[in-house]
View 1: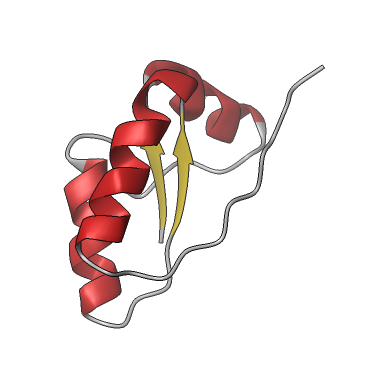
View 2 (view 1 turned 180 degrees about the vertical axis):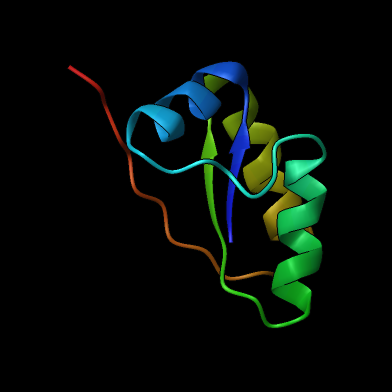
Length: 71
């Protein structure tokens, strides 16, 4: 499952040839999917990253961060 948080994240995914499975409500949707055993990737804009990371830590979900920087 692939999600996008923020318009820039959505556009980046579409430009890479992948339409996100979730956009509206993506943060909570990814957390719920993870609780049900579904592996997820979420592309998050800078402004939303810190709050999302705190949310992941509060619900004790494991995560891996990949910093993607476009040229």
